[in-house]
Length: 248
Image (cartoon, rainbow, N blue to C red; front, side):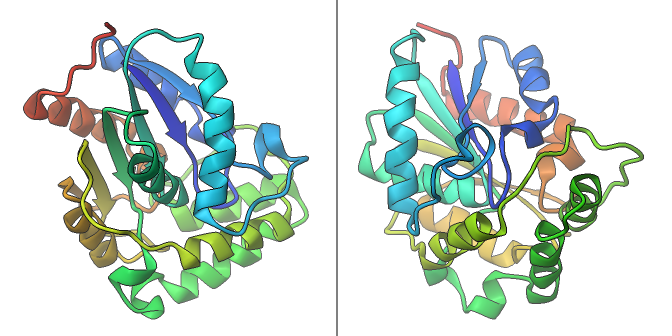
């Protein structure tokens, strides 16, 4: 099965580090493709839209060209804002993906703003994004988004536009879910998430009809904090749900 991976606020595909390779190695038949949200990574020259719907439209235009080159079914995995985009995509164009994995995602209609976000850490995150030194910026972000320490950056640093990040934030704060999904889905959340409330993330999973798995000690970025656990949960869920991961 082909997998599309989507990152979250002010992140690009580089921030997956070696997670896509680990995923392909441990999940038989998986082929991972990553696309950057407009305004970040390979798409730095484009402006980030102010709605999740517009971000999804931009991504889908690029994904359709990619999908023409890959045979077999597709699934989608999104973390944080990436999960919001994935949800909207599954609702708007349900034929595109057979299954989905959401990681620490949330929505405006699942709790009060102060319940949805860990406000003190979120302020720190915005401060970290605005740090001029790229290496120090990434170290500060990792201290907020991950619980395990990193002696070295697991990915190369890159420039981030504060303006683009704020535009993404506007899109995320406006996002609401509109009921359950028809596709099989899994929600992974972490109890030590410093950015998004674990309670609201679990509410997200319940509202969309996802299976839910909870990590007791990881931070917001579970794929970086504990990639082996993340992959094992997805592998177990694929087997239990009967979702076929082998290419057709």
